[in-house]
Each structure stands twice: as structure tokens, then as C-alpha cells.
Amino acid sequence: MDEFQSGEETSFVVEEVSNIMKEAIESAIGGNAYQHSKVNQWTTSVVEQTLSQLTKLGKPFKYIVTCVIMQKNGAGLHTASSCFWDNTSDGNCTVRWENKTMYCIVSAFGLAI
Amino acid sequence: MEEFHPHSDEMTFNAEEAHNIVKECIEGILGKVDYNHNKVNQWTATIVEQSLTHLVKLGKTYKYIVTCAVMQKCGAGLHTASSCFWDTTTDGTCTVRWENRTMNCIVNVFAIAVVL
Image 1 (cartoon, chains in turn cyan, red):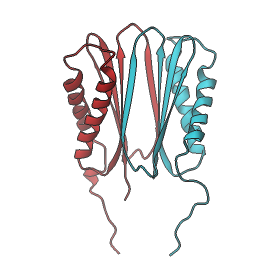
Image 2: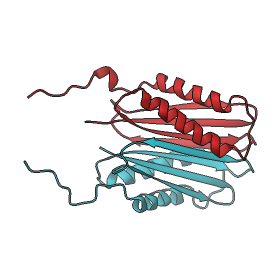
Image 3: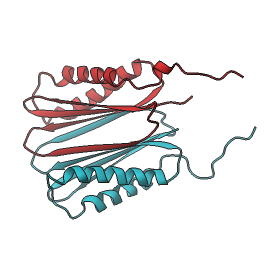
């Protein structure tokens, strides 16, 4: 019985995913100041763009992408995440970005099918 | 050759059950305290770990991701979004929002079915 062997990498490549996320952030909010009326649109655009680029990689993974945008106002923000998965095949990547008026934190989790 | 049929009631994500589990964890850890910069890291870590432990104890064949954000109430705007590429029949998510006088807490649970 032949085993299915993929010539391409089927593991979660952090650098590749990180670049995808940085591009999505730059194109959605790069150069903009925090604006209450637009933020919802921005967070949606970041997650959707990231997710669509990740799926285009064609790897057998399920993905979860989350994005947090916070106005710079002196408030403290702490985040944590914990995952119960297969350490050999699954992975995650978090990108932190900021400008003068806001912080943006995007996390991507990839789980092998 | 017999096919393995997983129990249908165990292959869907019960969001209500997860919601209750997480809510109890948050209440237990943040219920009686005010925002404290020195302790927040400890709190967020405990919330995600406890929630994850309880979810795993449900014994379902799922992988879980639990994220928690705690923010000081300071007038700042906070927006979050998430998007998932998965099997909508078996996978699911649940978000719990909690607050008290000095802080907001948002916990997300993502559950991905494991296909054996």
C-alpha cells in the first residue's frame, strides 16, 4: 500500500505566516490613525485577508486568525492563550504592530487535519 | 470492512457547556479583585490554563485553543475580530465577555474536531 507523501512541507511555517500577517496589517491600517468608526472594518479586513492568504498556501490545515486593535490611551492590555493540540504538526504565530495612535495584535493558529 | 462511526452527539461543539466552564473560571479568578498590573499576567495565564483543563476533561476528541484578553477600564477603545477556516459541521467557537468596575475580560474558545 502506497503512503501518501507530500513533496511540499506540511508543517506550520512560522516565518511564512508571520509575513502574511504583517502584509495584511500594513495594507489594512498602515498609515491610519485610530478611528472609532472604521475599526470594525479594519479588524475584519485584517483577519479576512490573512485567512485567505493562508488558505492559498494549500496546506492541509484548519486555521484560526484573531485580531485585536486597541486605542493608545494608557490602559493596560494583557492577553494569554493556551492550546491543546498536536505539538508535532500544529503551530501558532503572533504579530504585534503599533503606530502613534493604536496597537494591533494578530494571532494565527494552524491545526493539521 | 466495518467503518468507524463516531457518536454523533459527541462530534459537535457544545458552546453553552464551554461558555459555562469559562465563565466559572473567570469568576473564580477575577471575581473579587481590581485591576492590578503586577498580577494580570498571572490571572490571564491561570484563566486559560484552567479553562483548557476543564474543556479537556469533557473527554471529547477535540483540539482546543483558549485565548484571554484583560484590559484596564480606561476609556480606550478595544476591537477584536476572528476568522476561521475549518469544518463548520464539527468545529465551533464560543466567546465570553466579563467585566467589573476596573477591567474587561474577553475569553475565546476555539474547538477543532480531531478526525481519527
